[in-house]
Amino acid sequence: MSTRDVVFPAGRQALYDHHRYSAAVRSDGFLFVSGTVGSREDGSPEPDFEQQVRLAFSNLQAILHAAGASLDDIVDVTSFHTDPERQFDTVLAVKNEVFPAAPYPTWTAIGVNWLAGFDFEIKVIARIPG
Image 1 (cartoon, rainbow, N blue to C red):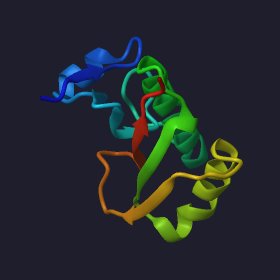
Image 2: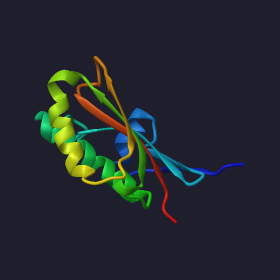
Image 3: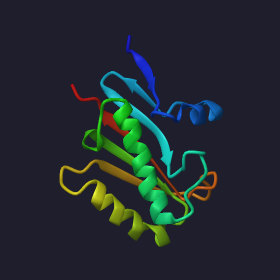
């Protein structure tokens, strides 16, 4: 039987408790991270799109860190965009900073029409080092 435990970044568990989901679940050597957005500490969206994307990656890094992983451990990425045509150049610029060298994770980008007030969301699967 596999083991499974939840992971929360420091200081943000109340936000996840309020919405009744886990930031991430660690299972059988992998970390499954829920969709992560560019939310400020109070849970509200960062209004500037580029900063919202950067904050989403920063929030993602906090979750990975809480699980003992890093961006280098990501194997699969799914991103959600409310206006992909307009937003994609900005997302790619930030992505190229976050993942500057190969090997790159797999990546699927999906256009959506609603993200609860956000314009970008990222979910990942990462391996747990060790």
